[in-house]
Image 1 (cartoon, rainbow, N blue to C red):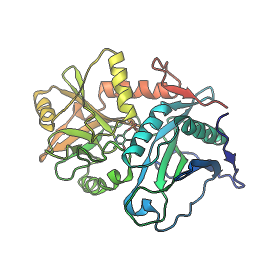
Image 2: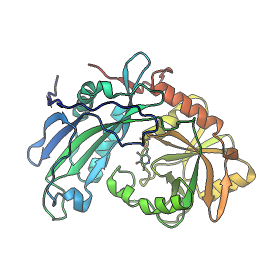
Image 3: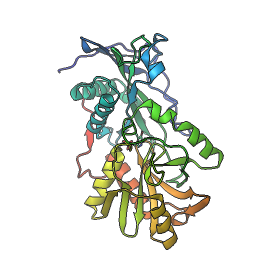
Length: 357
Ligand SMILES: *Cc1c(COP(=O)(O)O)cnc(C)c1O
């Protein structure tokens, strides 16, 4: 084995309670992975330790200048007791793209996968078995050097924490209502929109809160220059079924490269759908709605997998999509993708990776 990590086991394992009705990301397992970086030395001292708070100097750069990135993926328990990961290599590749954009040193892909594997072996019993549940994996990097100069940190911590999560939809897939945001923007060309970095989310909170106050569950972001072209929804990519085509905004530098987005595109092509990745204006969507060509729309992301859109609010008008119900294609994609992730359906794409050891 190329990577040997020290393992310190907890003396007080937590009780594993039912995830029924649990809120996303509020529970954590017994252990976590930590790896340090020092300039001149590189990444070193990978270890698995009991889940616990970490101590940082108040001057640590992450607190002041936001030099940090994160990832998100899920591990699933199959009916026959295997643990499956969904496209983990895509996450480490994307993490390194985020690292490069934020001037953070990259991580070796094999090291990342081995750290994840060894942590999951220790925490295997934490992968929940209840219907619709999974173990959410949150890798992240923070800049820890304690200096206030605005420059890339000389020290970092890479960590992986694990959170057992309940079924996203407790009563079947449910459509969400979306507020199309024409004032605030999420990202601009040349900015950090395609990096999974903390600032993007902090910058979106105000719009999200205002949309919530108006009764909408998510914000749809338009492009940061003209506020005309569709970018993404909350922390999901977005698809529209217009006539017999499925259209999603092209990755233009300010949109996050969703792994669910890529999986949906590949799946749709495999099924023979005509898919278009292109610039798509909100006006075109509104026109398609008026003419009856807009059949359905949905968001894609690791947490919800597929999130059908029941209503879009734009320029003082509400548009109801597909009668506010889950569309046929949204449902099919949800069933196929979650079925494949749980090992219940065949995986012609080779996306699922079984945990070994
Ligand atoms: C993580 C994320 C997505 C979805 O990516 P997945 O890999 O499908 O989970 C989409 N948009 C934003 C802004 C994200 O942070």
